[in-house]
Length: 320
Figure 1: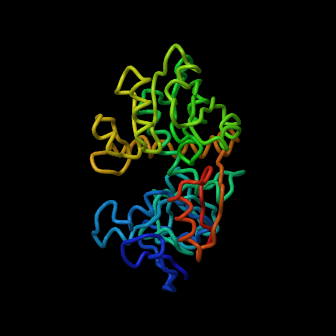
Figure 2: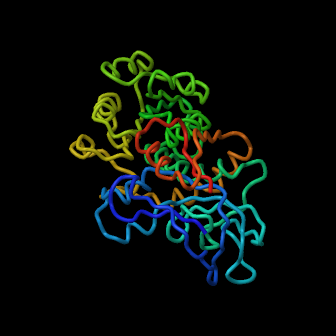
C-alpha cells in the first residue's frame, strides 16, 4: 500500500510517499480501507518540532479517517456505538495506530463507529477532530449542551474548521455569536448564523457596537495578540475566555489553554462524548461540514501547506 510519512523534522517538504506492506489487525482491532483523511494543524506541528524532536512524534501523524472495514482482527467485534462490525461496513475512526496518511490503517474497534446514512466519507473524516475541539471550547466557556439564550459568544478565527463548527454548535444552543474573520468570509459566517466583524485595528470597538450590553465569553482560535487583548477587554469573567493556540500574550495573561500544547487542558472526556452527537447532527443536516479542498495522497504536503498557511475556509481532506 501507499503511505505518507515524515522522514525527519521540518516543513511539509519532509513528507515522503512510500510503498509498504499493509498492516494486519490484531485482536480487538479493525483494518480500514481509507477513503478520506482529516487534516489538522497538529499533524504538521508534530513533525515541525513544535512539540519537541522525539523521533516517536514522526510515527503518529494524523487522527481521524473514514473508510470501509477491510478485515477484523478477531470475530464478534463491536464498534464504539455497540453495533457489530463486519467487512464492507462504512465507518469513521477517530484515532488510528501510527500515521493516518495511508491507504489502509488499523484502529481499535472501540475507536470505530458506523458511518451514518446520508453522511459522506469526506465530511465524516473532517468532522470529529474539529467538532471535538468545538465541543470542548463551548464547554470550557460555560456554553455546554443545553439552551443558552441571552448569552453572547465572541469567536476569533471563525471561518476555519474549528471556528465554523463552534459557531454552528453555539447557534444551535441559542447563543448569539459574534465572529471575527476576513472580509471575504463575512457572507459565509452569516450563512452559519453568526454576526461577522472584520479583525484588525478597532476590533473591540466594533464588537461593542454590535453588543453594547457586553460579551459573555470568548474563544481565541487563531492565537493572535489582538484576539487575546480584545477578548480580555470585552469579557468581564476571565474564566470564560479560552484559547486553542497558545501564544506569548495568552500565556502572559493566564488565559486557559485547550488542546495538546504544554499545560493545556486536553478535554479528553468531553471530546470523546462529542462524537455520537456530532455524527447525528451532521447526518440530520443540522450541522454543516465544510470541506474546502481535497488532495490526493501524493499531494499530502500541499494539503498540509494549505492548513498551515491558514487560508482554507472549513476543512482540508486527503483522499487516497
